[in-house]
Image 1: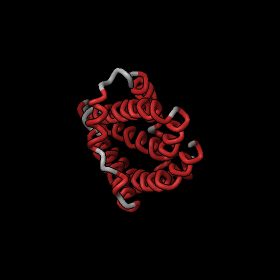
Image 2 (image 1 turned 90 degrees about the vertical axis):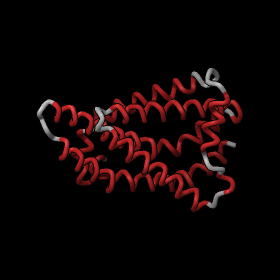
Image 3 (image 1 turned 180 degrees about the vertical axis):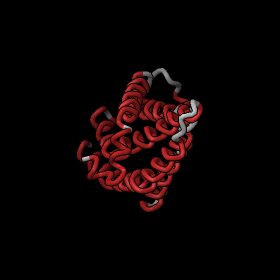
Image 4 (image 1 turned 135 degrees about the horizontal axis):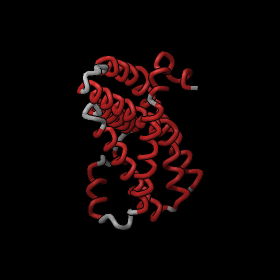
Length: 194
């Protein structure tokens, strides 16, 4: 399956699996914590987060699609590259995203119920979240190679080339596909639940 999806990048992706699993565990843990602490986080903080998001009802489907794609690609790339700082930014990105998704999910389930919330999250979990986790795992790989560089075991340049190639040829296209799924599947799934 890895070879089918990632082609010539399959070996590199396979080598990232311990870091990917760590990212997955941190994401799930922070998602649960965000949901669990949902009623303890002040509502004003939620309002501030929501105010930063564009009003989607005023956007055309194409504009919304482009916003989703650009947001995911830019953030994934930025946090992957920043992973060179000893993997810490990539870890922070995963924990923060998981917490915010869990926190927002808590608020949504209060208003619409748990089935609706779960249905709204499923389209994100198919492609988008695993792809973002992979991008963060690649960032952690860069951080590990930076530590090796400081220990005089250089490998950062080769690791960066692999990570950049993976991002350009696999992660970015998968994030575009994720936006298509989100725009087409999510409304159907949510309408089935409601």
